Image (cartoon, rainbow, N blue to C red; front, side, top):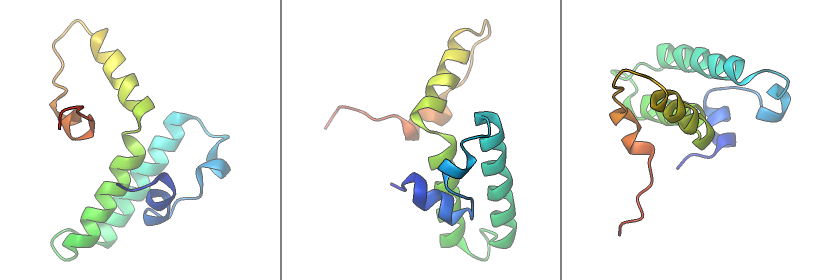
Length: 96
């Protein structure tokens, strides 16, 4: 599991405290832009391990517990059926 600080470093983003003045939407856009820039620099076909690390950093920042709750709340309020299967890797099970 990648920490927030590690993820920010991997994507060459400033610490969250220095970006705290920006909104969540702006922060997520910064993460997405940094991810796209890094994945162009380290394409998965050429740098598979590095690209995987970049993807994990992206996911660690984009799919925080708060963000997942927001997605779930939006989907619960939606009148259409929403496929949330993409969230399964980020949900913790109590089963052993």
